[in-house]
Image (cartoon, rainbow, N blue to C red):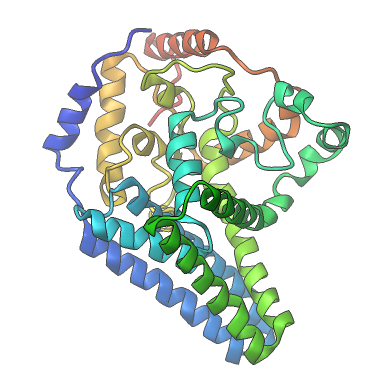
Amino acid sequence: MSSPDLGSLRGELRAAGVFEHCELRGWIQLGVLLAGVAACLVGVAVGPWWSVAPLIIAAGILGTSAAMLGHQGSHRSFSASPARNALLVHLIFPLFGGLSARYWREKHDRLHHGHPNVDGQDPDIRPFPFVSSREEHLRCGPVRRWFHRRFQASLFWPLTTLMAAGMRRSSILYVASDARRGIDRGWLLDAGCLTAHYTGWLLVPSLVWGPLAAFGLYASMWMVGGVMLAMVFAPAHIGLPIVRDQNHDWIHQLETTRNLELSRFTSWLFVGLDYQVEHHLFPRIPHQHLPRAAAITSAWCRRQGLPYLSLPYSAAFIDATRFMATAWKRETSTAAEVRSRSSQITAGAAAPGGARRAA
């Protein structure tokens, strides 16, 4: 499959105005989300005991949505101002969420966006202790291989509650490793925001309410956040081919990414990350314009005979769950195999009566 000129699609999208920033709307949405988190936490402190669990769940969901909105700053799709994009990144990731901004850029912007579903390179398809391919399974030690065979099918979703804790650990280790390469202004800002985060979220509340209450609330809220992050990412990528090499062209993004069809309110909570195809092709499109971008992109892909994958959320969730259950014994695909399969699917969809998993 040859690569059509992506510039023609970019031109259509630019003419439709989808690259124009919606900064004010973004700040308003962020304010609503953070106010919701604050209201939930106040409710936990002063409300009746029976309201604690639902309020913590709500705080975790709203806090994760705020983090996903903040990730637009890392992609520079939030504002036309580099300074305000950087402000948003540091406000949301290290200060509010406890994740190093530099760690996020390396993990998400460079590795995941640059190599989606590539074995050994995309960190998002191998959340510890799970694996996404037989090759990765065989690279693990005997204890982890036993875990994969016995528990990967049943524990994948329950253990996403630990995802946020694992990311925080990796973030702290990354900042420490970064310091050995040299301390500069960016490192000091990152480390300072992280220090303020843990002081405000854990140290001060521990002095007021005791460490058990402070740590329990913090851990519970971000356990919910881990589940929600997995519910955003896994259905969009897991279940699609895991590649042991990579076609270094933009069609690779179409082959390893799919959109998730959601209700309008759930899409608002996902902050546009249900439109993963457009987000991967053009990360600088503000999330408010992604629905319009999706309509243009899907039509363009049909004209070009390219794959464009989209599923109802429930179907994508089931597909990801089934894939992870047996991922430890699934062989990876070569880039050529994935490209050939994409061509066959696209040709079948274009034939009379052909089915197409697309919007």
